Amino acid sequence: MYAGAAGMALVAVVVVAGCYLAHGALTIARRPLLAAPFQSGWRPEEHALSRYHVRWYLATLLFLAFDVEMLFMYPWAVVVAELGATAVVEMFVFLAGVLVAVVWAWREGALRWV
Image 1 (tube, rainbow, N blue to C red):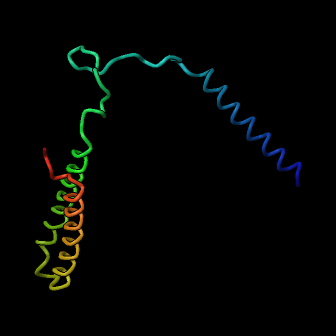
Image 2 (cartoon, rainbow, N blue to C red):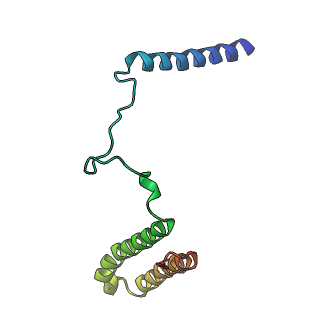
Image 3 (tube, rainbow, N blue to C red):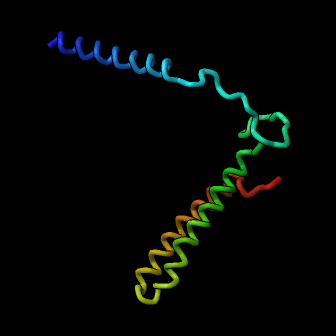
């Protein structure tokens, strides 16, 4: 039993070492490409993700929540007369979930712009 486990460990080490050696031998460009992103030829002064305050990400998530809400409400408005009261109840449950998200975003400060 012990010889089988040791053999499997040896096979695993050989496979991983072989993958590293194959990668090193088959890589065309060993050094990364040192090209700056196009912005009038200027070098970037800051990291791309450091420019925006986290509040904007919360506002973006809130905007996406309202977009998804509209994706569900338009087809619902087309068929609500056929489905009856259950469709109305389902939409109010959905809108309650969206309202909870808006209240949470409000409490987190996503709607404060100053």
